[in-house]
Length: 587
Image 1 (cartoon, rainbow, N blue to C red):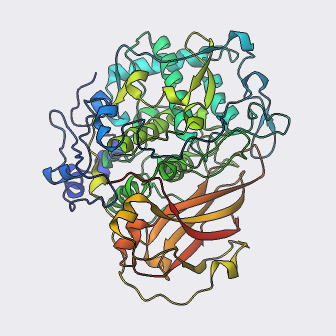
Image 2: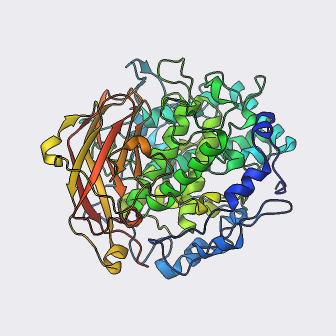
Image 3: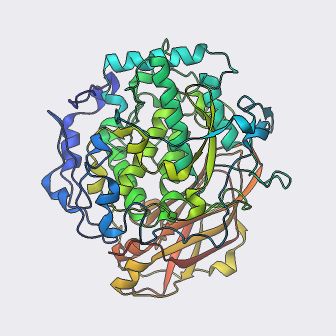
């Protein structure tokens, strides 16, 4: 394992960013977690020469040591006091009354489509059902996935060796780089129907639901094992793009060498030397580097803390056999996952290929680096007290892959919840967003009158819309807040999946231009990265309100103001209401 020394900065990074700025972000105020379980602390261990989180951050949730699966103790023991990893107390939905876990029609894959409805053959080699075996991981060692900006030349040589070999394999080999890229295409662009529902043509799409995180975890797992095979090193681990840390908020320089197998030509060339904008909406911000980094950290706090208080809020909504796809994305999938895809993709291509469109995203090696950090967020969320679903339909949902020996295997969600058993952990890095709480532009504001949702919806979101939404109950007790999350649900969001779609959502803000990512008033966004399996899809998007209303001094309001601001292609919205989600961890 590489030592955790001070990062090696790319030239563009070194010219635009200095260690003094890291110190600036490290000196922010003490974080608070009103909705988090009490009695858990988080620290971030740094090795020789690494900057350290100040001691005042040790009062927020459980100690993090990412060198050994984020915590030196098994997470099932770490979280024992609040129900455990699998939980005696359910953090997700209750087990369904009937078994309806999802599986794809793997042996009957069909052509996917691109956003222009052109057929694409993304299917893996044909496999007979008798040749597929159930796969249960049983790692004997734990490898460390390193931050992409911290890797050394020896590690980079191994990654280049692996990808060079994979690119040379015949396309029919499921371990080839093209075949690996097609895995994402097939699972995300209509290559599979739901097993048992092929006749009714119900698609299995792993985005915008509780399947998003476990599918991509398994996907990276087999990609990594194939890399190990062709690097001739079973200790090799893929890197993660550390976009939640100021030192990692630039495009990783290891992917910029045009002669390297890590290079892809279809990228936004204007972004390769600029700071990443985690709230990117297709238009480059005019804010300076430091402001963008500050806003990025606040965005991470919102998505990992404020908007991740339940399993549904973090993972996404339930998706069972027989359901229509696209029920609703979780916090991290929406932002920053979708935004990073869009930020990297080539704007000169019709649909932002490669990273900017799901059917082509896997063709860019940075895809796997990006998703490794998305996967890391799941580990971090668990370490902050978040518990996974205990619903049997989630645990028993399954996917199919080809392993490093080109053998077809079936895997289950239940077998990927512990990365230690999968044989990897993440390098320890500073988690500065734990200090980066948003600030309200104003508190206890007098709200202007506005129509009710019933008077406005359904409607097409072609311009800014503001409605006054009645709350089910005001001034809930502390116990009530600990038991359930107050949620704003936007339902019946109908949009064209072949287009980039984004709209922002504000609360108690009658002047959205005065509020940005750094403000409490901006709840978040709905975002779609182009897909091709269907022209029109209907979904929903929810936002947590409990902590936000307290910060805005609006907990005693009977009615709150909700403002929707379109940022791209128009969508149709059928309804908007406030309800309670009773799946929070009790403090």
